[in-house]
Structures are given as C-alpha cells and as structure tokens.
Length: 259
Ligand SMILES: [Zn+2]
Image (cartoon, rainbow, N blue to C red; front, side):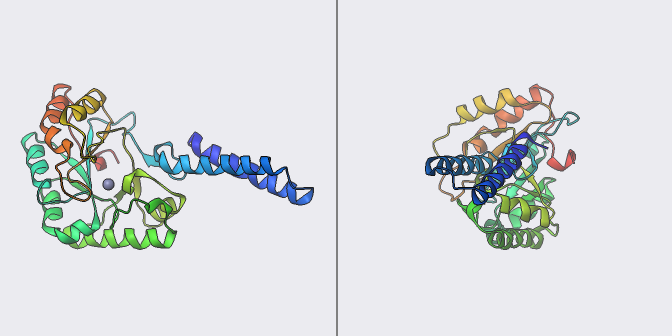
C-alpha cells in the first residue's frame, strides 16, 4: 500500500477515535478541534493535488523495473491544427505514443481520433468536458462525464479506452471509485513538460524532459492547448525529444506495451 494511503487511513482512524472520545467524555478545546480539522483537510487536499502518491487510487506513474523504452503521452487533443503535426513527427521517428483525448473534442473531430488509432497509437480517455474543478465533483457527475467521454471514443474508433488521466492530474476519492467501477486504470506521469501553459518555451520543454528519458519514463506532453489558441511547446519540441530518446537507444512505446 502506498505510504500516502496508509497515512490517510491512519489520519481518518485517528479522527474517528477523537470524535468518539469527545462524544463519550467532553469536547476538546476549540483550538485543538480546529487544528485537527485543518490538518485533515490539508492532508486530503494534498492527496487530491499530488495524485502520484496514490492516496486515493493506484496511479501509474512509471513503467516499473521491467519496462523497456519511454511512453510519450499527449493530453487535451485531438485538434486539427496541432495533432496531425504530432502524428507526422511520431511517424518520422517510427515512434508510438498514447493520446489522452477530451471527449468533446473527439465528438467535434472523430476522424482525428480514428487517425490516431489507425497510425498505431493508443487512445485513452481524459474526461468529456475537462473541467478544472473536476476533482470537486460528486461521484454521479464524474461518472456521467467519463461515460460520455468513453462513448465518444468508442463511437470514433470502435474500441473502449482502458486508461484514464484525470483533468489537470488531480485525483479525488470520487474519481478513484468511478475509475474502478468503469474498469479504468488511472495514469499519471514521471515527468511533465508543463507545455499546457502558453508561456512555456521549446527550450524549457527539452531541458525538463530530455534528462529524464529513461526506461519506464511516462512523459506528459500536450498535442493541443486545452482551450485552443496556441501551439503547445511540446508539439514544437517533439522532434528534438524523439532524437534525444533515439540517442539513448530508448524506443517510444505505447502504455499498453507495459500492461
Ligand atoms: Zn488536460
């Protein structure tokens, strides 16, 4: 069990014991009760924001000791202005990758989702609306969004996605439960380019990613800007990243090659 989850169980048990004890005897001083509540909320919030620690769900952040090659992953597409460029660069390097698609964009461009699959890449799901505050949503809301996204992908490519990356990477307990119910494996990353931000430069992407390319690395890039309007620096940096992987003799593989 991840240490973060053990810590969460311990803190939850401690809180319940504290509440039980208070009810059976007398309430604690207000300052103690407030401090305990703040600490517990901070712990849970940390678990949601830093999902890679696995507080609420097992999150795949690295291929593990037996994994060979690197898994390039692309979020927030498909987009006709940038995704084809990524596909061409991958083809030129004989590289395979995994694309975490946004359901509403798949509905707008199903032919692009089909093209990603036809060119040998793995299609995975990244939510339908890609809401910023998705991790604060109820289990019912999360489930409806994910089912809608899965359906959009199934319609476009004829295959049900099995891997899920949470919008902006935050994993709530509700998302963990729904992913489990829908048989989705939650995927994080071992290194990310931060290229979803408009100000990120190509140089910054290469400097962040190239040294972290190693067997089992899961690289988070973007083949499209979340709301359009700019070309993610990762798209422009991709030929250089592929060359860096080749220099290290690391094949670029799909995530399901490690499953
Ligand atoms: Zn995203």
